[in-house]
Image (cartoon, rainbow, N blue to C red):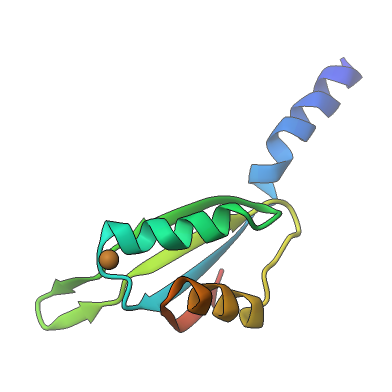
Amino acid sequence: MKKTLILALLVLSPTIFAKEIKVNVQGMICSLCSQGVQKKLSKVPGVIKSAFQLGKKEGDVKILPSVVITTEGDNDLDDKFINKLINEAGYNVASIERK
Ligand SMILES: [Cu+2]
């Protein structure tokens, strides 16, 4: 019984304690752009997921392209690191949001 519980916690913990970092990215306008960023993110230890949203217009409001990075457990990526990674992929960070 105990073993099962521990096992369940181990399996679930990366998602339960995951952090989400939303990065608004300037210039990431098509799926090819986001693939480049995704490739970079996939090599970062602790990153378990990256979900891309391309920019769009809602009425007169322009919504920037963004990527929500999910990190495992307590792993966080600091702003400097994120800026560097996005720059290396060829784009610029507009803002970073953490929930
Ligand atoms: Cu593109």
